[in-house]
Length: 353
Image (cartoon, rainbow, N blue to C red; front, side, top):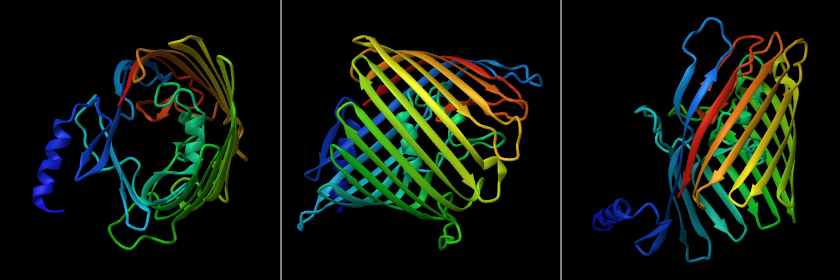
């Protein structure tokens, strides 16, 4: 693109109000979107060695993104997206486009993407969970080990993903080499990941399942993982259930099952009550490594883009487990010790544009 097109484009982006969901650059639509999620938390790590539990301010997967579609003469479209985490509670920096970011081709209900993207295994739990990025987040338990914590809710690098999506069915197939890192050299083909996911929507019922197979993952080494979930809407109520199995070839910590149920009740038009329970079984050859987590919350919509909430979560670890109270998605993690029962109370605000 010539410089005389680049400069007006940048000016247009910087001068467009946040309320605008899309602008035009060189005659094509550019979507600008984002999410601001901050909370005031009060946490107890149940760790006798620390004395600084208490209040903290947390920025929780806040983000800014840009995406677009460019039509081609043959009827296909070039699709692209880059998305960056934004931290509102400190000035730390990270890699550019460190969230789901890709370029690809689309035709009808089919598309092919190359870049960085959540695995289907992760997405099944993301869509099932009711407390995304809050202290009630699922990732302290699902995809987590009793000692290593959250390791298997991956956004993989160097990935190729095919997707078919319509109103009823969504299918994803993903393959990645050196999926946890990129060295700036030829990707290490001895490290790889294959994933497959499917979502089926029928009236008020959504069924989903995902499978992934890892070679030389940093935590599970070689192994597989499987999730299946169901969400059912019944009037003002929503019920969900999930099962997870992780099976490492060599690491006992990552040979275990997990189960989850949740419930949401919209008791008035602009507010709902949520409850979620997750249980992780003992890992193979690892007694007293089970744990449970209970999350409760009330969420109140201020308008279609903004909501506030109050949430409480507590984790109960067996003697040889230290699943974190908060681990993944939420900016401030809540660690603990073996047998600990960490808990958190949170007041949060979310704004999407």
